[in-house]
Amino acid sequence: MSGWLRTRLRAAIAAAATLTGKRFGLLVASSVVATSAIVAAAATNQPEASPLASVLGHSLAADRTPVPTPTPLEPAAEPELEEEAAAPAVEHEASPEPEPYVPEESMPEPVIVPEETAPEVAPEPAPEEEPTEEAEEAEAPPKPEAGRIKHVFVISLASSGYQAAFGSGTASQMPYLSGTLRPKGLLLTNYSVLSEATTPNGIATISGQPPNKDTEAECPVFEGECLYAVETTTLAEQLEVGGFTWRAYMEGMVDPATGEPANCVYPAGSEEEKVEPGGYSARLNPFTHFHSLLDVGGCAEGDVPITALKKDLKSEAKTANWSYISPDLCSAGFAEQCPEGAPAGAAAADAWLAEVVPLILESPAYKKDGLLIVTFGGVNPAPVPAEGETAPPPPANPLKTGAVFVSKFIAKGSTDAARYNPYSLLRTSEELFGLGYLAEAGGPKVKTLGPALLGD
Image (cartoon, rainbow, N blue to C red):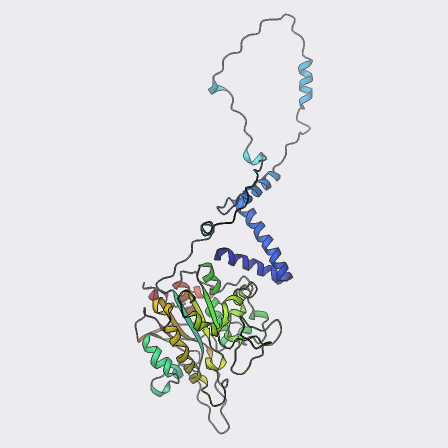
């Protein structure tokens, strides 16, 4: 089944599952989708119509054909015969006159019943055959094409302020980011997050949805506006429909009940999320907020523990076209989330980058046509000073975080002072893979790096 059909079927099944349970939803949605597709295709003469669709469409048309019935004003056939029989007899017989020759051209045209009023006998349906791969490709919309960049890696951290990341000299608390990565690529000096909270920025990065009151509160319970309806599309589904692959790698993601690594972990129903200090939190995982991914297996399939990253990077074939990578709360750079005596805040995030980023830069996929984006998905709350200590002054603009793009297609040591945000990240990714724009990513004021990275 093609990505286009699979994604549409997933969305329909998910919508039904929200009403009556997943198993019943699967049955109902599958039946409804199949029946609707057959009827619609036959009724509109779409190229997708199968022989069964055509038969059903014509049968329905025949069933709707009105059957003519005699009215009281119409003369009946039998009285006419009686009148003919009752005609007076001829007294003298005469030789019958030969009928005049009538040329074929002047003969009356036969009366043809219009097709729409004549019941059509449906032919026996041909036995159904499994659709070939070529047939599926012909039925699906044309697939988009990626430009020269075909593998994107997005790393999301917590910001301790622009100066803490990219300040000159000792002002920077992230020497690997500012001293090693930044010279390899492009620094966005005016990149800013939409909110100090982590959840809304991650959601905007993969769907273009704006912050709301629930996501601003970091969604301790997955209810209300923390969960988006099945109709809300994400970049993950866009990529699938386009024939591309995606993965989300989450550090520390385990099953709360067993403590074992697990896919797509999030609090169920009205249950409040239990977060271990420095561990995994669903607020770092935007893919868990969409019914379009949760209800039909997209999240369970593509949202995996970070332990799979090293193995996937070993070959280009196993490396997804678009990857989202998030450390745990400590390694992301959140204050007071690391063990006592270990690096914390910006220093912890920088140490994690120095360990993980080289794996990406040395991977076959990155070397061939890759792009690494190191961005910030939220603001690290200022640590509470100990007794007798003075709290450091807050950043002048806490939403300004900066971001770094690294690729062989980018000039080393370059800078860009235009205003970018999470919508810009989404739009850039969509343009790199030839996709349309989702929600706020399509806004007229959203800046994008797509054309420059595509070489336009």
